[in-house]
Image (cartoon, rainbow, N blue to C red; front, side, top):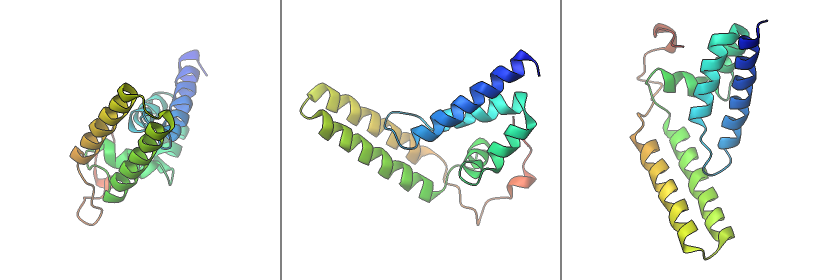
Length: 136
């Protein structure tokens, strides 16, 4: 294995870890890291790429997002509930610092707008993913 492939596998693995952390931590993106992991794996390891896209928790999320089909209503709701709960806890924990509260609220509003603007994936009306061309 050459150094480039090893580095891409390492970066992809780090990105998967950061993406999973982003599911639970406020201000930490999930989608960006998972898409970056898919890209790194697609350029370095067919085995890791197939594992990521076939993963029962992350695979369909990445595939539908990359194909432009969007994310499900459940994913939107879960994301927004987690976002606002973690931001609310962070604001409560910081307690009273107005500028921190303002920044956290602004980030939460921005992410909420982004999530709501994403296309909503509806499996019953979507064309099968296998019919779509593979994207790197």
